[in-house]
Length: 247
Image (cartoon, rainbow, N blue to C red; front, side, top):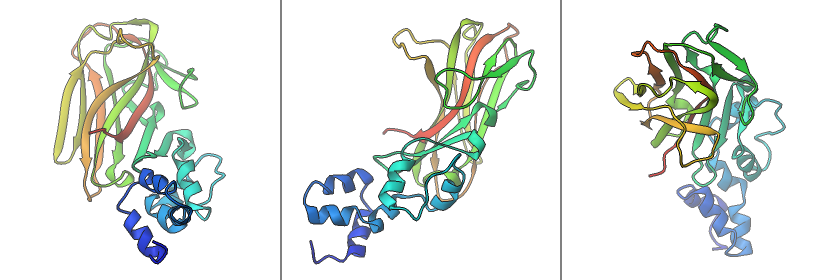
């Protein structure tokens, strides 16, 4: 193994995963040195790593640093774009993940204080979340370019919400969820209610899934319940998380 050029070894590992590279470090000190090299870990970083790092809020990271250190740092959720998005890398696969804040979503009447309030919420990853005061037309949408994500990957989109104790009318009718690309549409229904089997305050509502090809396309994700004329309230929205699906 000592006779294998470092660039060849890095190329071989590029077909593996970050988890495989870490496992090789346990085999021998020679493999550890080669598996920890910048040539290997640079393969696991996003192609636009420098641009992503420049968008981090209060950055203390440089892509010129040790590449493994950069990877490990980006595995921790990083606030970007003025605190309105979160970026991170899935540590086992190296796949890109995002969360769009509630501020990044298009929420029907979201700017009207009669219907929605914006405030810090315990457990939120962002400075503020959106809480539904009362409304009959519930609709929110988000979007992201597939060019920001890992190619050739099956992704899921999840609306992160909390249901306040005062909540009402959210599960009177099913809400419609969707994920759409130019040549693909996924639709479904879901009841917004707190599952009886969990004590987690923040819940995930799956909006749908999609596959990223090599072309850059806009993915549109949304939830709405507009058929009922009854009032609804008490839904707290943190944002939409986009991450690879476990298959």
